[in-house]
Image (cartoon, rainbow, N blue to C red; front, top):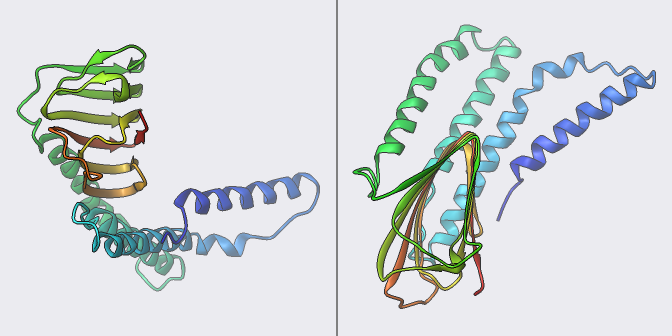
Length: 252
């Protein structure tokens, strides 16, 4: 069960700010100066949202041997929740003002290290036979029948659109390494194709079928077999850094 969608939370905040700005244009001045100290409540709600969603995923995973507990999502929510507490404490003069600055001195290098490790890990770390890069441009595959091979796709401030429903998928394991950096990747897969999915998002979002992950730092692994005994297996390694990746199943 989802608590609140992060986009809903941010959407409500933006709508509130827009209403305040509109009323000021119409001559109605609202005194919201006292509310500025409580903006960290947004972080508290978002962090709590991620924690509850992660715990909800754990409950679902008990009956699904292919699901794994999203520790990255849980820890990300915990971190954002703690940041909300710290900034709220600073605004209310309960916590010293220099504590957030000291925290970010360590947090930013840690995020960079996590990004680097994420790029190096996995079956494709040793290199693939081919790779394509969408650098401030776009790559499309699937409008005509094509042969799928293990390869990597990088969308850097660009977009990649892959339709595997029209692809000839070989027997055995095929690996697709997907990386979106300030860009987006959309993948359509056959609904009956067994998939091993490993996703990581850092300040971004990744959606695999009905599983959504996003936030500061999240990570998830899922095995989607759907009762199929096919000799073909697709391994997806998805990484989104300030970008987004969406993987959805389509009926053939």
